[in-house]
Image (cartoon, rainbow, N blue to C red; front, top):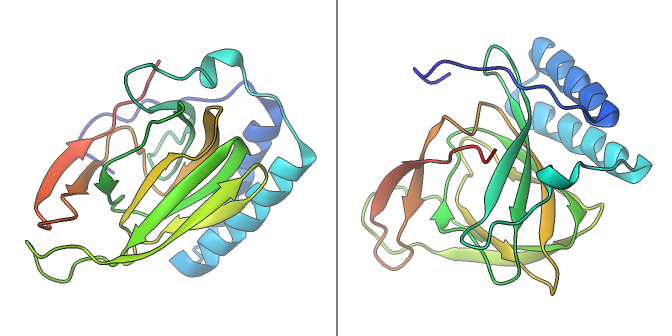
Length: 193
């Protein structure tokens, strides 16, 4: 948990509210990170397959940059669920999360390029591969020890992903990397409203 105050946010999408309850129960079970992310991945995949509608204000792209809308933030900061939206041509810098994360695609195509997490500072990053994720597909995007990637919209329509993180991602300080030099810059994603 960050030093900033955690302000709980709850979704008005019943399917996601139920999913958030199941994630909270999995966390309470004390699963190790790998078992937890596998269980969250499987549950998110089933939730996406069953279908749900996100409010229009949680899928709206920003013309300037990608945005993350809070769908659920646990009162204790133990996890958050976001609607992450990239417009056509938009992407993230190379970055880490400093926590675990699971990503499912609600609509569109997300392109993810993974990098080896640097063992020492200021060395060029090594790309490990690129995947495309389409609607209904789910991946464990990060664990605390495997946590560097870049994401972008891969199609001709905005991509909307459901991102689940093991912290309040809108307040968590994280690393951004220059892939050519390995230089690190700290940033905090802010929640879009």
